[in-house]
Length: 143
Image (cartoon, rainbow, N blue to C red; front, side):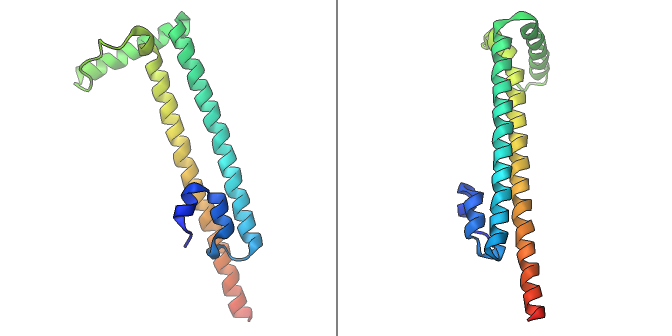
């Protein structure tokens, strides 16, 4: 079993020092896949974060995009007030109301990216653990 305290800090290093991944080439392949997974996650997160910030900036400027976001937010706030979810929404300034759905969407997408990344990390770890177990059984059988 991998040491998950190390995996929380760096799955790449964890893969290299893990005893359950078999020989060094198998551990190196696992670390390479973990590094690739991390690079993809960073690229996706930067893209979503940058897009969210640009969207918020454009919504706060006003213009057509800002007016559409303002209407969407007002509809969401009306629904939330009607259902009793929100009570004190009059305190939110107009320019922040326009940015709220964009910020919420960006946050949800970043959460999805993180969840997908963690799932993929587990898949990669399990794949190379299984490969090491198969190699160990082959060595035992073939002697």
